[in-house]
Length: 131
Ligand SMILES: Cc1cc2nc3c(=O)[nH]c(=O)nc-3n(C[C@H](O)[C@H](O)[C@H](O)COP(=O)(O)O)c2cc1C
Image 1 (tube, helix red, strand yellow):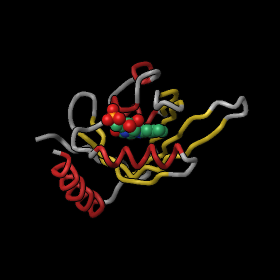
Image 2 (cartoon, protein in one colour; image 1 turned 30 degrees about the horizontal axis):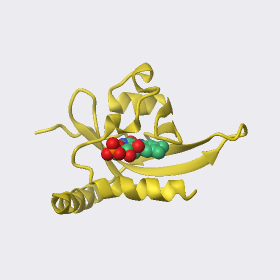
Image 3 (cartoon, helix red, strand yellow; image 1 turned 120 degrees about the vertical axis):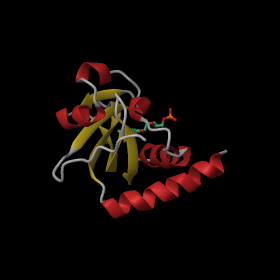
Image 4 (cartoon, protein in one colour; image 1 turned 135 degrees about the vertical axis):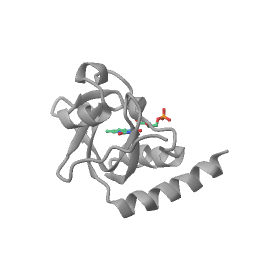
């Protein structure tokens, strides 16, 4: 059985990517829960923390939404480098910086026990339909 890691109530995990989903920033809390140093995350694709239980459709929805310039909100199960996982409620924002480059920022907080139960079931059903 994989170990679930629970976020602190006030934890706030932030990461930023370029327009292709390559990580350009992560805050200390993101690094801590993911189990990576900042050096290990920078310039890596954000799927480095992808958990196999996440359905493809969730990320299709995320990317479809932010590429249109809209904000995506949703529940994500992420894997920890050395084993285990943690759930978050994520808000992903598209941005254009003053030099014109585009990117995305994700801000994550703890998902409640009920939300985790609900999305565990939903994502399990979505995964079954994938195969
Ligand atoms: C700002 C931003 C943050 C993201 N954060 C996560 C994340 O925490 N976990 C995750 O699995 N995917 C995250 N993604 C989505 C990944 O880029 C990727 O689409 C996903 O992991 C699925 O991987 P795949 O496309 O290789 O199947 C994020 C994308 C963006 C733009």
